[in-house]
Length: 227
Image (cartoon, rainbow, N blue to C red; front, top):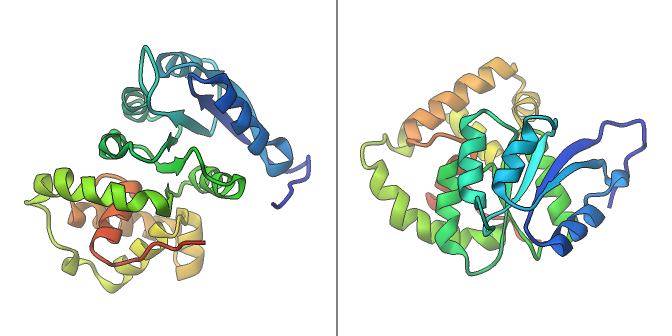
């Protein structure tokens, strides 16, 4: 793992999980020397929403199955209120909730069983404004996407209408690049990148980066990278 000096900016995190042991493990992995600061913890989604009124954070790491207010509903409310990006934590076999989390506006998906390095990469990508989908979750997510989401998109335009530059941007989005990183790689301004992304979303019939990534994997525009 790479280390971060104390003078560098630390990504402020809100951890949301009803299991204290899971939160303790996340605190261990997402440590200050890795560039993170856990500023608050919540037992359920409702408590997380309340904390956001008084706590500034840059990424919310959110479990999905919790009492009172689950992670799906909490994500939906947070995204609707233009809150911080949400990285959803899930486990194998929870494929029925993946599309619901995607539809709620989650910025990414990581497995609870992820290695520390993978989890750190996921949170960093989310903090930069990118999206992250664990490659091991893609088969489940794509299965649900094809069954549930594609029928809703029958009126959407087709991927062939993307320009070559829009395809370049979509590939970079799928690599978890932020707008600034895309601009740097394509030698354009961030405003140009934002314009391309808006056009991509409109043409694909999606509303956010995570959904665009799933679309790109589904259509074979990009392929998942495995360690």
